[in-house]
Length: 258
Image (cartoon, rainbow, N blue to C red; front, side, top):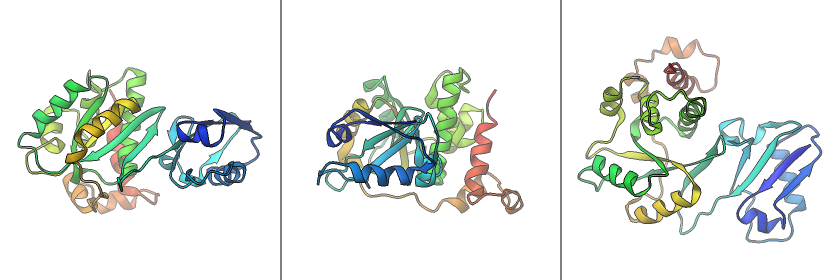
């Protein structure tokens, strides 16, 4: 059996909190097709604008809609609300809410700005990473999965998760080197990585909404990252993968475990 949990607007649209179905061989895509068929007539619910978590992990961090489901899996359906043309990058990893926010270069002292946010929202993990050190969304998800797993196992690289995160993006166990390499600096694009309760993230989002770059994508940082981390073509060619650079970065982040 597979259990499907509905959150937010999905709960209202399906008129239930959860649903259990037979665990015949199916993928996330098959499940969504099934849900589309049983969805009560509801023109406001968009099946294409949802997050699908498999046992607490965003399916896009697995094999996307090709992710195979098995007996005992718990699937969570979470509608993503995009109002006013906002392009919010938020997802769930290990039952934890995460959002990425890119800010305009308006802060004279981004480090102080970051500390002020942390003071206002002590229940959130907030870290800033220079944009050019982020390869793509899957890169972010893999790094954060490592940090969340380390926190759960009591094996963080530091006593704070935000420090663990920046060290993994910098692929170093030296805190000062990590901050210097990928941390916030005046006049450089950066992305805020925010981890915690959804309501608190939304509150922070509303507070700094006027500072956001609304429509943005991950730039093509592959060449820059490859040079910065001295990743050779020979090293990439030795990896059997469709995303070798992403996998190398994830591996280097992973070996930082104590």
